Length: 179
Image 1: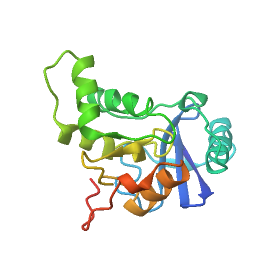
Image 2: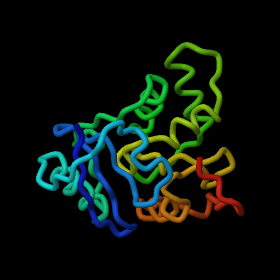
Image 3: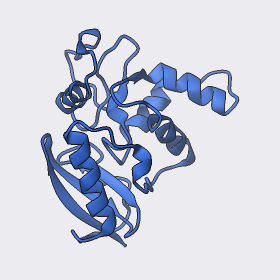
Image 4: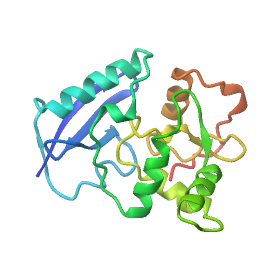
């Protein structure tokens, strides 16, 4: 059984999901793959401790503080490959970004492979079920293109800008490319 509640953020309504103890999902309203990793009905419950902790985390984040990913118990649902990628995302510092190719090199090294597909990394990043907290918005294309954010490129831009990223080195693609 899963539970859900909502949070009104400066970038729109956010839905959270939990197994009752750990955070399993966090999506913007209308986000691609919304709720896609929760394979059970979600029951509204706004009084769970994990939801209260997550709301405090989000308030700190949107107030310009730098809450740590480790401040919350997370349980994203996904296969082993995706979980490896999501763990790498958790290590991207606030206010910084990394490319899909860089993540591919990191993961290849961790699993003792000569190389890894950036496209496979993009698929895993795009299916991240815990937006903002597992910071998939901090991943960009090799040329600095803001591509592949399931929550929308406008939100990705605003999140990076909020974190103080130098946006002059980044570009918005002419055509949307959310995965």
